[in-house]
Image (cartoon, rainbow, N blue to C red):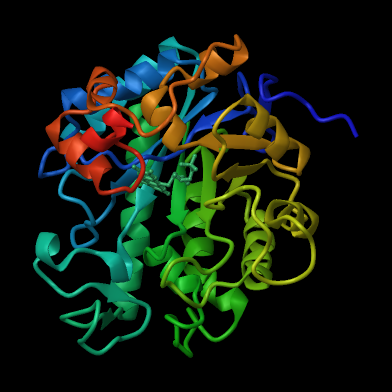
Length: 371
Ligand SMILES: Cc1cc2nc3c(=O)[nH]c(=O)nc-3n(C[C@H](O)[C@H](O)[C@H](O)COP(=O)(O)O)c2cc1C
């Protein structure tokens, strides 16, 4: 089998837009936006380094679409004219480097912060107070679901008006769109629950409405988690493949699986590789994007060999915003944990560094320096 190279262009066939190569900056929350979600000059500096660094596509960090859905104090928002104007600057900057730019649209759902939103989180079904939900989770009414759909579509319209190439709907990692897919969290017996197909209704409705309002060359992607992870239960590969194949029929442009590790074995079923199983089970004729331990050119090429069409780079990009330029010229990559000096050169301010420090293994400690 001949695998194409990650340096080759990638066509989003349904939208008719082409990325200059198959590498993608994975969505990376940086916590550097202002407290009201306005973009900061530091995050723009970071994104500009990534745009210059050779990636074919940038996916901007999880971005708030509705009050009440906030998860991080420094999370960007795309809910006001001012914010739209700031995204327009990012779009213009990226276009200057011939990079496609998508913004990841997000609502925290059961993971939304009580502290930042001043209210109990909401989800498809109620969860009584206790444990990780001190105020419980409020079950969404039909009216709230309609408002939420409108919020996603409205932010997508803002992304289009700002000149971005598209959006990615964040339906992974136990956030709201993922909560609706999860049979453990979605116990509804109305039109939004009860079967796999019905659990995809919210996503299908958002996609259909974006398609109704915006030109067909606007890219719409969806990010999914393939399996349960950490202490989040209820997502299984066979279920998520059904979801992926339903979504691929909904006129989306790419399916992005957040794998954690692109080379791991599946939790469920046969086969030595989760990614190979996904490739085999995915019948959509749209690009399949994957993220998880794509650290260097070799791993990028291996993921393509296992069946990915596009590879998204997360942690490695934090220390190497010029990741593509380095790997395509065989220049040495800087390895994690990254020094604070390196990260601040890449645009991470004190808030950004504090956030990265909360993720094990990303930022060097004084002990690493001595090792
Ligand atoms: C600091 C940090 C921030 C992240 N923020 C997001 C995010 O906003 N949205 C999202 O879907 N995934 C997010 N992720 C997950 C990454 O997109 C990616 O899937 C994950 O890091 C695995 O890829 P890697 O092994 O290359 O790091 C984040 C990961 C890290 C390390």
